[in-house]
Structures are given as C-alpha cells and as structure tokens.
Image (cartoon, rainbow, N blue to C red; front, side, top):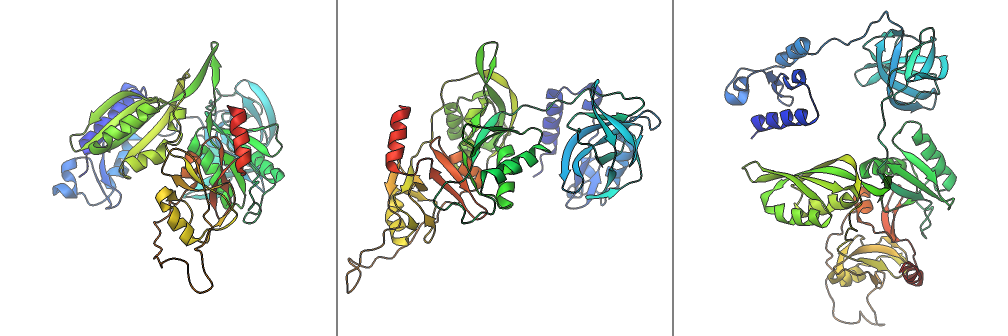
Length: 477
C-alpha cells in the first residue's frame, strides 16, 4: 500500500516551494523499511517486490557518498553560533550549537558577539558532546562538532561565541514573533489549592521567568491584575506544551481563551495568516470545506489521489484555526490529517462565528449524582461522571442547543420514608466526554476559563454566580 512515486513527487514539489537550488533538487532516493531492517536503491530490490535487499548497507553507503564533511577550518579563530538554549540548575544557561570554525575547550576565554556588537565575555565552564542520547564531557571540540557549553550568561539564540583575540560575529538568526496570546492566572475556583502544589502568583511568575531562559519564542507580560500574566507564543501547541509541563510539575492555575496577536502595518490593522493543509476521505470533504469557509479560509489548491482521499490547501486567519482541531477530528471520525504553518500578516477579516453549542452549567456545589446526570442526558453530552466534585458556575457538559443552560447535577432521586418515590428506573449513563488540555483550550469561549491542576482539567465560567454573568453581559452589550 506504499505510495512511493506519489510521495517522491510531493517531496520534490515541497523542495521546489521552499526555494531549493538545482543541486538540492537532484537528491538521491533510497527505499527503506526501518521496521523490517532493509534498504535499497532500486524499488525492485525490495523484499515486497521479490528483491534481495536484507540489510541497511545501502543507506550507510549513501550517507558516505553524498553527505559532505562539515565545512569550516579547525585552525581558524573560534566561531560557535548558538542554535538552541537549555538550562541546568547546577551550571545555569546552556548554549547548544555547532562549531563553525576553530576549536573550543573548557577554561577558554571567549567573547560573545551579536553580529558586529560585543555583548559579553567570559570563560567556558564546560563543553559537552553527544554520545547517542547522552551528554558527555569532552576535552575539546573543533569545527563541525555539535556541542553544549556552559559558563556564559549572555548567550542567546543566534549569538556567536568567538575567539577573544580575533572576534568575528556571524549574522544573527531571527526568531519568529508570537502570533497567539493567552492569560495565565491564579486559580480562583472553590476547589483552588486542593490538588496543586504551586498555586500562588509568585510561584507562577518564577516558573514563567525560568521558561524564558530557554524558550526564546515566548513572551510574558504583566497585566493590571497582579494575579494575571499575558503569555504569548507561536501557536496553540507552543502554549499548551508549556501548560502541560507546568501541570505535571504540580502547578495549579486557570487560563483564558487564546487570542491572536494583531499588528499595525502601514496604518492598517493586520492579523496572522497560516497555510493549512488537510488530507481527508472524500466522504467528509463537503462538511470540512463548509466549516473552513465559515472560518474565513480561502481554498488555494485541491488534489485527489484517485483512491478516495483528497488534499485541500487553504490560506486562513490564525483566528479561524482556534478550536478547529477538535471539530475537524469529529467531522472526519479521526481519519483526517491536518497541519498548518505561519505564512504572513494580512488585513483583518470579518468577525468569525462563535461556538455552535452552548454549555450546561452547574447550579450547585457538591458531587455529581448518577440519577441527576441521567435525567440531564437529553439536554446534551456530559464532561463529568458520578462522584466528580462540582461547584456553581462549573461547565459540566455541552448543551444540545446554542444557549447556555443552568442545571442541577447533584439532585438525587426523591425518597419517601418507605421506598423511592416513583417507579424504579435503571440508570444507564452515556460515556462522558474526556476533555484533554488541548481540546479544553480550543473549546472555551471568551467568558470561560480552563482550570488546570495536576489531577484535573475543568471548564468554568469566568464569573461563577449567575447574577455576575448577567451583569457582565449587560455591561458588555
């Protein structure tokens, strides 16, 4: 079932779109199976074709023949450009990169250059090389080696560590600006502090400051509220990875709906746009195209593979992708593939339609009761199961209609002093929807928050009391 010719054509087209030169487009092709342990230069030599390929020798020979030796002169003045950052509680900030020229060793005096400007100097504390996945200390490294250094506080992405006597900085590599922002805040729900280890604004601030040491595409700003931090990143995935890491470390907090970062270009308000690529079965094509059109996406290309699947390419506002992943997986029943990458900034399009459905909101504090949830099932799908701790203003499910509905999920079956009031009824609950961090962040609306703890992911209204929500809606209108 492998589509080797189609994949080769797609790879060539991708290289061409990325601006590859003639030499890069004339790449060698090898057919291999890592699972079965064979590689060959001719597809007819594959075992599935009756060929004799039985090992990976062809791959190793290809690497030796076509992969050039690292450029650079070991005898030239040192030039080591930082490509990534890491952090150690013992040695501080770590710089990861490749030695372009010269040699580097522990104890060596160096200067740090930001292109043509010297921004610092110091002594190399430690030089680490790679052995498999392990980091091992090395006595020295030379041109072509990929290493990690410690001991310099001024290092950042793109700076050059140079020879002290002959410092020559390299052009700085650019870091893309954030396109999406979220508010991280102290958890203020009635269950705050019951499951997390780190819950205060100071602890959250310190953790975000530590993240900034290595996560160079991240931006953190203070707000008028001391308990709220505005965190900006390259997209939903960038920010949710940070949230998941903090949650696993024991942090407890609440986060608001993601928003795009706007820019003013030539006096016009602009928003980020992305190139979206979708691969799906033909049967789901109509519904997906309708939904993307609703989100202001513009179709730029459509190809059918002739085997029941179609590839769609769109130019779409980043706003339109917020919450689309979960809808897309539902519409394609898990069979669709999607990827997207930032393209550019463009004029702001019209407002996007909101969420299709309203939510079910708990009216009381307490534990969810099976009988109450069973009676509410005709109102929508539940996020909670019997025994879950609930509170007033917590979102417990998706309403089947487009409005929010306040319900009582802790109400038990009425009893008399003899027996249950009414006939006995078997309680059979539909399986509750399991909300992951990503799906919860995509699901929430502007007036909702995601409550994160090491043990739970809950959705709640920003204002827990009904009269507070009414007052807020009235003020907003």
